[in-house]
Length: 115
View 1 (spheres, one colour):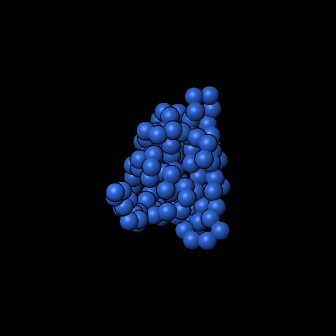
View 2: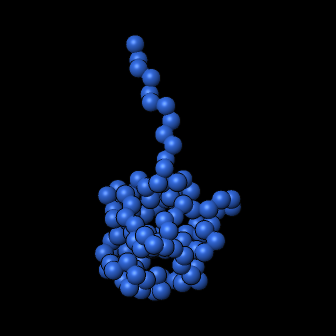
C-alpha cells in the first residue's frame, strides 16, 4: 500500500460508519468522534456496517488521501462500539488492510536454528 510509513499514529472509529461519506465527512468524524485534528498526519480508519469495507483517511502534508478497500470474502476485524476509539501500530494497520485479525495474529513456528 502506498501511504504513511512506519511509526504513524493510527486511530480506529469503533462501530460502523456510513461509507457514503467522503473526505470532508470523514475528516469531520476524525475531529468530532475521535477528537483528533484531521490534518495531523495520523491515519483514521472507518469500517462500514456490513464489515466488508474500510476507508482510511490520511493527510500527507499536501492534501488528504482516501484509501478504500472492499473484501470479496470475510469481514475486517473491528472493536465493538463500546470501545469508542482504538489505537493501532503501523504493523497492525498493515494487518488490518490485508484482512488479518490484528487483535490475535497467528504467528508461525519460530525459525529453526542453524548448525
